[in-house]
Length: 116
Image (cartoon, rainbow, N blue to C red; front, side):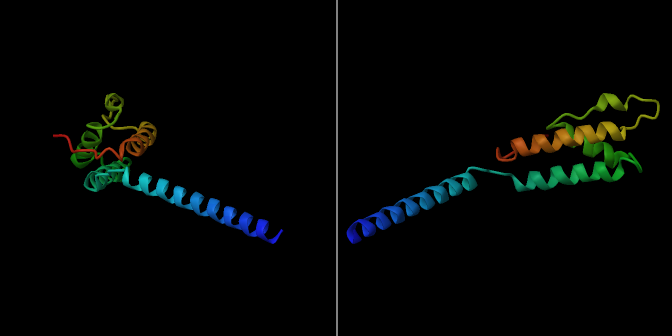
């Protein structure tokens, strides 16, 4: 009975060690498989923040440059700016921003390169 107990403990220990070593190697594969361009990330989110900060203040040249930058990579509803005031409506911005963030999450590990 004592030998059987020692064998079972050894088997359980082996299974436990195998499980942890496999799960940690899977985690390290996930970490190395993402090739995020941190310079692009910084620029992208700075432009999103600029639009967000100016949406209800002054939709100036800086604001439009940020929309143009974002629009090179994901959808910006420029057609919504054909209103009487020529401004980007807050409701459209909120909808577009959600799409921008989803786009970034989906593509961030693909080493996104800057477009001219």
